[in-house]
Image (cartoon, rainbow, N blue to C red; front, side, top):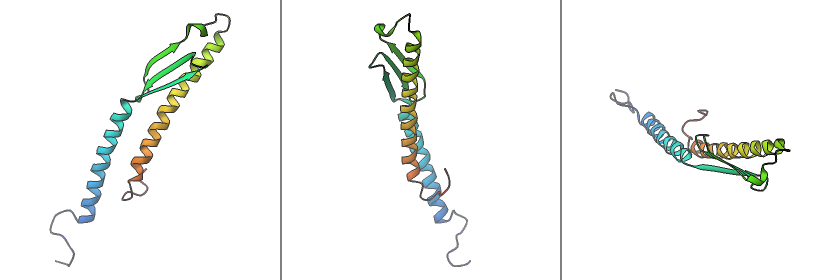
Length: 114
């Protein structure tokens, strides 16, 4: 057998890559669980409208201050709701991107994977 060969097992470098992949998968699952249990809250109109979502991008709550309800200016209320909803979604997306960037930072052994 040639020097430095192996006898039917996985070579050391491949074994390390497999261990890194397993650790990355565990880290990803942990990150996903943390994000799913995180709530994101965004208000618009000085607190007139509040949107709350969880990390799965499901709405948990939308709160509208009764003083924000003006039957003669429904469009303003609609705009405030859109602003609050889009703000909460952006917060969740930003946190997800930040978490993914941290996870990918440890991918030195997997260039170009993501």
